[in-house]
Amino acid sequence: MCGLVLLFFGAEALVRGAAALALRLGLSALLVGLTVVAFGTSTPELLVSVEAALGGAGGIAVGNVVGSNLFNLLGVLGLAALVQPLEAPGLKPADVAAMVGVALLVLPLARSGFRLSRTEGAVLVALYLYVGYVVFLLA
Image (cartoon, rainbow, N blue to C red; front, side, top):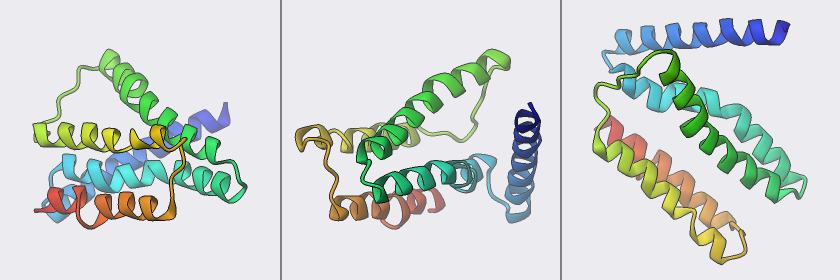
């Protein structure tokens, strides 16, 4: 129960801090949510997946990422909208297309027996950080 209470207050602090950061830097709340908040909330998943990969449990690493994304899209977004209808001013069709496009990039994993090489991992990270979405958002 204590963990749930701490989680609630931590989430409240994250949202308030992210909104304040967006205002201070003159950025949209959507941009801060798509970058800073997304990274912060995904860090635990990153640590679990890296630990699983180091321990030779690649299935856990992939399952963690795929399961988390599905739950975030369907469960978290759906439950949040049940509590309060959501609006995302500034969200563009290109943002949704990027989400769908990246999901489609993972499909070749099915053809390779769900094996992701270091090179493919580097390409995915580069697509996010350097050549892809973050640069698109900041442009």
